[in-house]
Image (cartoon, rainbow, N blue to C red):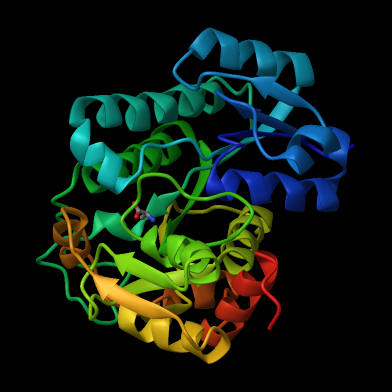
Length: 313
Ligand code: SER
């Protein structure tokens, strides 16, 4: 029998699509979606769903027992921009949620965990271009600090208690099924809605702010691929990369398909966060260790987004 899988944060941007893909691979009944709020219609209709607060250890334990869960994908988190407005709350949520799941594995109740890290672990002292797997890691945002601490705790639980936990450092993830909430890379999703609806978009990052980005299909592939690797000898939170672009570069590609599209720029507090992050990422370690390679480039990303949002190309 296949392992039963629990996704926590199934109504979020990545959680939504992860549930749908995992249900396709492992069967609808084997993949339990859970979140603090109900989510996407497809997720709610295609298999089991539980209302679950990731801060409530007992409720998580009950759901794990009820379905005999063996694997958990912990996708609930407070993202970078929102976290700056609620530092203490972000720290509590991002850390306690992780401990709640790590402890279930330490106690041998579950066997395997996926926990996402982010390019936000890097800070202004990190080399900006082709940022290596191992480099200066001194984040200056609350979100980045919580992700770095999380990486260190995962490594600790792996070494000390043999916990099988796996991670990637996601770049900005672009998708159309569920919008992201509270991140610094969100502009690259919002822009598509506004391009279709209003033919113009006011970017909260300057025109030349280049950041690492990835289409959702690649992010999901990386996640599932890493979880399918046979053994997890050493805990590594892998750099993964697909493309890098600035708001101006993205708007140029959108203009190919929406010719009267116009961009304006009015940077806000998110600019400072973006300025502290890398512009491009070296993911050769993931490529070597588990054969990872992104497939979707900027042109295909733009086409898929516009089509996904029902714009006729
Ligand atoms: N996309 C995230 C954010 O902008 C980065 O992990 O916060």
